[in-house]
Amino acid sequence: GSNIEVMLPEVHHLLDAGGVLTFEMLVDVIEGHNYDEYDYVPQMKTALAKNRLSLSQQEKDRLLAVASGRGIGIEMHKLLIEGYGACVDVECQHGTPLTNACRNRNDELALYLIEQGANIDYKRPGKWSARTFAKSYKEVMPLTHARISRHELTKMAEKKRKQIEVDAPVRRAM
Image (tube, rainbow, N blue to C red):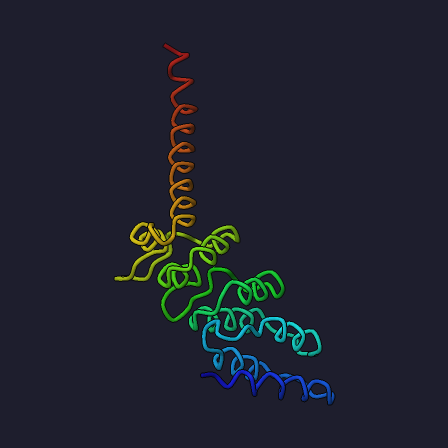
């Protein structure tokens, strides 16, 4: 189980009493969460809205890295990326949020992160990239695999188009 059920009411009580949520408390709440067994994103949004804490970019990115490393789902990622401007390609324990989503076979989250501009080719030495995970798990990640394949085709078409533009003046000169 998780102690998140205890932590969030305490956080709300603190905020209602005029207290301020610290960055460390936010990290504790996210680290205390056990995957998606308890959907606390709406409560986190309320707590953050009540809070007067302004987070640095580094702190926003760390919250996303922690959430990603814990396997927390798409709603928390959306909150941190769209609501707070966390970097979609933040370094996590095992790569980036996208490589984590692909490693965890979370097709919906991986597709969302790609649409937010995540780097599909990022990889650490000796580790798989999101592209490699998506190809290996294409049966359980059909949307992500299709999106990455489309990305590859687009890159090849752009390369071909540029080559044609380079070759065109040469052909005309002949």
